[in-house]
Length: 205
Image (tube, rainbow, N blue to C red):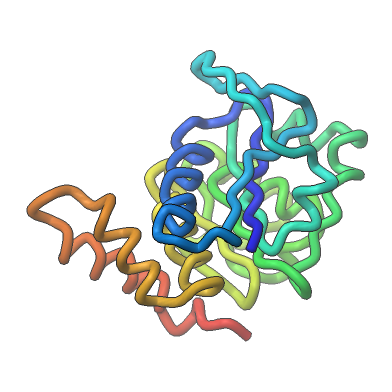
């Protein structure tokens, strides 16, 4: 099972790296077939705060993954206007899970994958995500079939839990959330997060 996290220059560290850490725990639990990759159009990507990371894979390999996470960043609109990058993003919700966070929802719209679906984004990105024709809802997470979106930097937990639930199972998602949750808040943290993930509107179509 392969999950690719799309990470472009100007990326938000919290989006890409929280998801990477949460999702990677499945492999630590013994699933050697589970793989999580940072994907970028360049060998390295530098974040909005100057953190440079090496990409594991390029965009073509990411598009062949079982699931793709579209992270956000300060240069998302520039990415959306770059035909060399956008032409490589051949994503298909019929064969893979697709999750987008914050301004990543804008790329989802530009790829023609939001359609009439409601979606989440952050407050900064909201005006231009709406201008792209997206019906933005005021909540941290929503999923329709194989497409999920989240709004806010710390909503990466919801996307990660949704992906793990869909690809491995609810018990595994709860274990991962419980492991990373703050001490003294673990049970309430897991309960709240899974309430979003298991909401009736997030059930796979």
